Length: 636
Ligand code: GAL
Image (tube, rainbow, N blue to C red; front, side):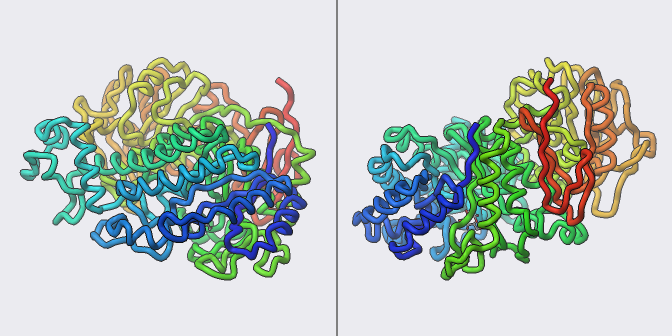
């Protein structure tokens, strides 16, 4: 597999005289791809129906002439101001009913039919004109669905579409009343037009209602994307992708990804450490200029799954960003490290955001590969270094994972809808498990929740999946290795009710969750043999074997055959013990790594990454801060 670099570029931000020099310098730095166009609607169609595509023709020609390949973005994340005059009701409304107005981006409601029609129109225009352009080698739909909390809208358009969605799903209001349990608090309705969106209620709305609204909102993102993909496919054979974000779980990325050829994501390690990770001050300070050592790897593995093996980094942080509470500069070498780590996890392309720092607009404080005066910024030399190294480095896709983690977006909605304890966050739980697996030096695959075959992985983790799908249940039943479920796995029916018999209700596992409790910060339930449960703990009963007990003698982990059920949220030390024992039992050989060090195997090489601020000895090698090392694996 050929691995290449790219960059995000905004020709409409710069005088045309600069374009060819920019293109020359991009090629000189060893870049192959340029993504353009995704925010350019006001320049493509300055007035309704008056198109100006000549500049885009020239920009593509200039980039192509320099040997660069273009990723053309559809501009639907930034409708121009006139669009609002045409569709005054196209804005999303927040949960308080306030419009999310014009003046930044993503100011649209996914359900607005008129806006969808205008999206279809501009995508058709672009697809017809550039679908066969030899320089346009890939397409991006929109930009970062769900970013800035834009998946759910509480607009009249969303309400109308939600009612239609419910009518399709339930066929009759009586069926809906039964499914939601609307007899509770006299919430029964007599028709679909009596159902509102689950907001502005006096106290919490029915969780079944909220869950359906979240499923609907996710489906709206998928169908909005599909509309564009179907148009593009009529005019181009180039691959189509979307750029997802870090830790956004509001829509089902697997569902959107099913319509696309490649998944990509936007990786901002320092921004993410600062603004979307539970971490103490010591951790934030230690990794201030490197980013969390596992956060990028988690998303690389997640998006490899979303892309069914094909994935890119579409936007890689090149220097300080502008949007986190604090915006430090990366340690020298980290821009290179982040790129290599993505390649080790199987990325085909790593593209940097952005080429030149803009002197205007909201992101004037956001670094690029060039400074606003066109002088090289520090990221450029590191990008060029990776480009040089790529020509010599071993080319191989990433090795299959030894262990697997099931990730389910709907479970993120489930535990946001009904956390039962403020700290019960699904992503956080999965990320803790991922971190523990990675600390053991294991290669990890992330699996979608409808996986029907677990055979390739001897150890499979299924924490917190609210409702196990039929294919996954069958795969678990057939699995010959070990599957560890819990806490809260299979504890809701598809209608978000408590199943009876009580969870986890797995054939062959004689274990019942008799009671649950959530625990505030600072409170833990120690486990025999070390470690503790935090945030969440369950009382387990049944005839399954008790493998681990809590300090009071209660069952903490129960087992029947290859199935384990874990009755709580284990801390890092408990996870390390549970996973180490499971590896030993399954004949997997963990290769524990020092804290702050990551590793990933390709088919032929082992890559090691030092995120620590100090030098570390690992695998017989001395790695400086931001150090990357690879060595050939013994041939098996
Ligand atoms: C991304 C976005 C880009 C740019 C970047 C800044 O989330 O896709 O357009 O805003 O962040 O870091």
